[in-house]
Amino acid sequence: MFLLLEGGLLVLGLAVPLTLASDLYSPKSNLIRATGYNDTFQARCLAFNPLDLVANATVNAHEFVTAGTTLLFPDNDATCARPSQTVSVDVCRIALNISTSSTSGLLAESWFPSNWTGRFLTLGNGGIDGCIKYEDINYGAMNGFVAIGSNNGHNGTGGLAFYHNDGVVEDYAWRSIHTITEVGKKLTNSFYDATFNHSYYLGCSGGGRQGIKAAEMFPNDFDGIVVGAPAVNFNNMTSWRASFFNKTGAANSTNFISAATWSGLIHNEILKQCDTIDGVADGVIEDPELCHFDPTPLGCEAQSNATSCLTPAQVQIVREVFSPLYGASGELVFPAMQPGSEQAATQKMYNGTPFSYSLDWFRYVVYQDPTWDDTHFSTADITAAQALNPFNVQTWPSDLSSYTGASHGGKLLVYHGQQDQQITSFNTPRFYARLLQGMNLTHTEMDSVLRFFRISGMTHCNSGPGPWMIGQATIGAVSSNDTVGVGFDPKSNVLAAMVDWVENAHPPDTIEGTKFVNDSQAAGVAFKRRHCRYPYRNTFMGGDSTLPDSWTCVLDG
Ligand SMILES: *[C@@H]1O[C@H](CO)[C@@H](O)[C@H](O)[C@H]1NC(C)=O
Ligand SMILES: *[C@@H]1O[C@H](CO)[C@@H](O)[C@H](O)[C@H]1NC(C)=O
Ligand SMILES: *[C@@H]1O[C@H](CO)[C@@H](O)[C@H](O)[C@H]1NC(C)=O
Ligand SMILES: *[C@@H]1O[C@H](CO)[C@@H](O)[C@H](O)[C@H]1NC(C)=O
Ligand SMILES: *[C@@H]1O[C@H](CO)[C@@H](O)[C@H](O)[C@H]1NC(C)=O
Ligand SMILES: *[C@@H]1O[C@H](CO)[C@@H](O)[C@H](O)[C@H]1NC(C)=O
Ligand SMILES: *[C@@H]1O[C@H](CO)[C@@H](O)[C@H](O)[C@H]1NC(C)=O
Ligand SMILES: *[C@@H]1O[C@H](CO)[C@@H](O)[C@H](O)[C@H]1NC(C)=O
Ligand SMILES: *[C@@H]1O[C@H](CO)[C@@H](O)[C@H](O)[C@H]1NC(C)=O
Ligand SMILES: *[C@@H]1O[C@H](CO)[C@@H](O)[C@H](O)[C@H]1NC(C)=O
Ligand SMILES: *[C@@H]1O[C@H](CO)[C@@H](O)[C@H](O)[C@H]1NC(C)=O
Ligand SMILES: *[C@@H]1O[C@H](CO)[C@@H](O)[C@H](O)[C@H]1NC(C)=O
Ligand SMILES: [Ca+2]
Image 1 (tube, rainbow, N blue to C red):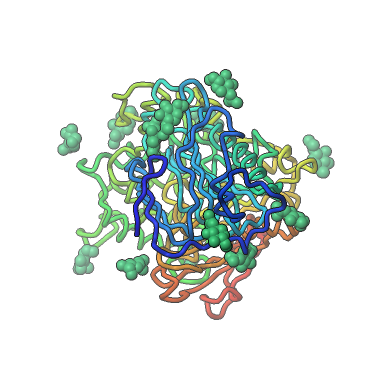
Image 2: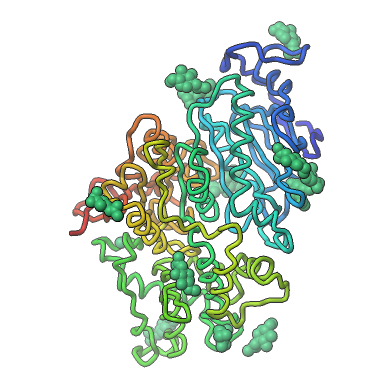
């Protein structure tokens, strides 16, 4: 092994012979600008000059990286929790610092695989990040895409960089994704001396919002957009997330409900009331919209065992947690948390501390007051957040026909985990209904441009007790020690499904999710289940519930 310092970044290489990928790559013309190299992919990588093509940028890293190398990022913000990334295939890595305004700039990370498919992929971020998702960039590259992501205009998971800096807020709201997409496409076409054929986007949560924003503002940027748990209706969603601290109270308050009670007593009662609505007692509620959970049976007055019951005030807290958030005049702000997510929600939403993404957004963007806290969160805060809506971060379009219409023909694949503990899955049907109405389409017509899959048994973007692996990114395609995972098959991988839709006009009717034993491929498949596109509902037909064919997608009358 050797260490070298390159562009300020430590690179850890494995002492394996370089795989010069000339056999995988046949340049269409002689692009090699430097002398002294053979016409190999490595030579092409090192001879390429990105600054010929990108204005107001500096190079942070530029290197040929062989498959199996582990890159180290010692300078990466610690809150991003991404100190390293193993690279799965030979790539040319180009990282640029690109200025976006006089007060802002972004770090773009682009990987050009030697075995290129002619496809281009932009990767999104999450939360109010600030974090390059190296693992998703690797996921794109290992499947033959040029893959580009960024730090979204600031470093880390916090929001301090937004404070008194509109440039950084604008990068977050829309500019970062558009900038790296334009830059990435230019670099791609020049790097390979061949024009890319198709352009894709992949992101979840905050990254889901970024994908919808791209469709809204820059309809020509992508041919296929895959988004999970999109953080659309962003302003009200931020308020909704802030409201939980006020609902649960602080962790030391008298009626605070412990994680153990949420995960045991309350979760068990929810399963008791709702798990078998779909016909199978498996801990997975196929459609939480059918679950009208009533906490009354948990009240101490209704229980003989006073050590495992809720006080009247706690019953009321549970009721509020599972109620929609309303504004001052009773108007809907954001739909209710869906039942089934409570175990995962104890980590952040119900832990008796303010939800950090919302806290930072109110502090550094809405009020520009670092001392603000959400102890007394009220409808006035909801109104203030909505009124500010910087750079239309809201992302709540009623019409995406400039993207989906005949002139461009873009496709959208949306998925949402039905046990999402951070963005209720009830928000996405509302978004879907808004588009149906705004675009004047029936759901059958919408099927030709946008398909929305409800992923039962999946928490926020990934994980959960159900068949949640759908190729949504590295997590969700392969588990940490696995190399194949669900593979790149359109029937079980959302990104592959999008490629098949865009390039072969085969839209996915279902997405087959996989649940590995302990989420480990090596331990074997626990079960698979096909997830239906909205508004179809997954329905058990009898037989062995672990077999996909025991279920079918049904449209209610
Ligand atoms: C170029 O290829 C020749 C023959 O294959 C080899 O001997 C030489 O070391 C190579 N040079 C470089 C810079 O890779
Ligand atoms: C580069 O930066 C300068 C000065 O900030 C600005 O005027 C110019 O528009 C930028 N160019 C591009 C292509 O962004
Ligand atoms: C962001 O982090 C990178 C290292 O990943 C560092 O080089 C850069 O200076 C940081 N930018 C800011 C604005 O702190
Ligand atoms: C990126 O460029 C900005 C100016 O646009 C500069 O302040 C910053 O230090 C640069 N960061 C890196 C990592 O080069
Ligand atoms: C190159 O990519 C194609 C298509 O993605 C794949 O079938 C092939 O096995 C890859 N070849 C190598 C050597 O990785
Ligand atoms: C784009 O698609 C065409 C037709 O399938 C193919 O011939 C060409 O090689 C592709 N280009 C790239 C860069 O893959
Ligand atoms: C709870 O903790 C906060 C902050 O640590 C403190 O200010 C408050 O007095 C405590 N409340 C109770 C009821 O103990
Ligand atoms: C009462 O509930 C506690 C906690 O769930 C349990 O350990 C205990 O066995 C229960 N007692 C009876 C009599 O059911
Ligand atoms: C956001 O909340 C306000 C109440 O403050 C409400 O009037 C508005 O309709 C909500 N917007 C959406 C898209 O839910
Ligand atoms: C929630 O906010 C309201 C309105 O400001 C306040 O009266 C109440 O004390 C808060 N509740 C908690 C538990 O923080
Ligand atoms: C909506 O579509 C229907 C059926 O295509 C059509 O009859 C109607 O005029 C459309 N309405 C609007 C407002 O475009
Ligand atoms: C992955 O492999 C390492 C080393 O063999 C092991 O320590 C770790 O527990 C494994 N992780 C999983 C999720 O199986
Ligand atoms: Ca069930």
